[in-house]
Image (cartoon, rainbow, N blue to C red):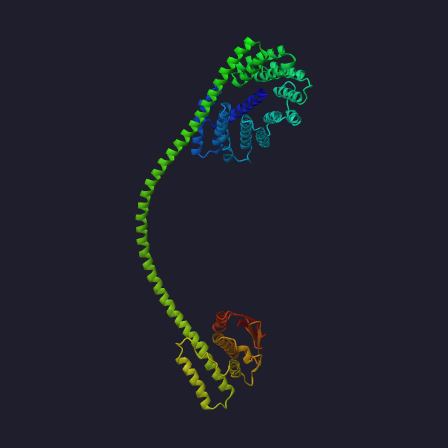
Length: 554
């Protein structure tokens, strides 16, 4: 069966070689080492080819050419397999996936070839189920007919080793080719072998002979080698003379092909079939060749391992030297950065100091301006509105005596005197609802009727003093605005307390505002309601009165 595997792998090599012609042409300008590796490989100098490919791989790594790295690894893995270094081949082939993109056609073909190598390595280690898995992966990544024929054949060979003959015949039958092609010869020969192993009574000789005839006409030496091996195996017990003839022919072809494995297989057959004297000679040749092959393969394994070690060692030495150089450069860079940072910090500190002085001056100016605005607002809210309120009371109540007027003016005097204090008249000792009612009544006259609903002390019990002050000022501003501008004769106020929120509704039947753009007074109401987390809305049209709604949480 060994010749079946060797023949299969030869076809793989032929396929890879044909495929690599264009590959060589494309990378020739990129890597002299890669090109030289093919010169060595074509002349049979696989060791030299391996060394050149290892150098090419490092070149491609330096250039970040992932495809070049993958091609180098694939070919190194194939050479390691040919030289019997199965574990070294496996180590190289398993690195390939990380350098290729399986969504790109060209790279998928490279992946397919690499999985084929992994399959052959698994078979070399007699892991036939594992090999089958890799060959099936190889099929997924190619649409090349020649490649598919090879992979179907390889799977069939694995199944023969696993004695799953029916499945093996099914895969051998998938190979496509002309009746006179090498693919057809391989298909006939392998199907015949499978049927014979499945059923010892089956006669495979006609199919073996037909396959041999095709291979002789094509001068396919590897194919002839396989056919002679199959015929020698078949006639081993039935016609030993014929088996001996085919074994001799196989040995002659194997020598021509310089295939040690096939020579050893042929010698095994000759030892069994030859007369005692000749068998002894063949045995001596077998021992010498076997020892030579084992020595060569051990040397190859050691050589390839040494090459990989030297490569990694050189890379490590290079990285170490590079690290030391980087460390020196880093020290210089850190020193220069330190000097630069010091200069930048000094400059930035000076600029920051100047900017800070400018900001402080601006903040002082803004503070003075805000203070002015604050006092203007206080004068407007606490003095001007109170004066206007007293004026309305005097106008509406001509009979008001001088003492009462003096008392009201004295209150205004104390308010104006204490403007510098943060809180002014915020305590409504007689009750907030009563203070509101008193303020509303000061705006009522024979011409203006003010209707108030819901203003009861209990709704103000939980309201903070600051909120009361803002509400009082907002309502006083609305009443003053009404008195000055609206010409209204009816004003309605409603107070509601629902779900921890107080809502105040104000409406009058005055002339409204044609183009609503709140002036200072009404603008202040918006600012004040926001300060207690409330909201306020204005609804007004020309000659349709003014409606205001504001609410705040408690």
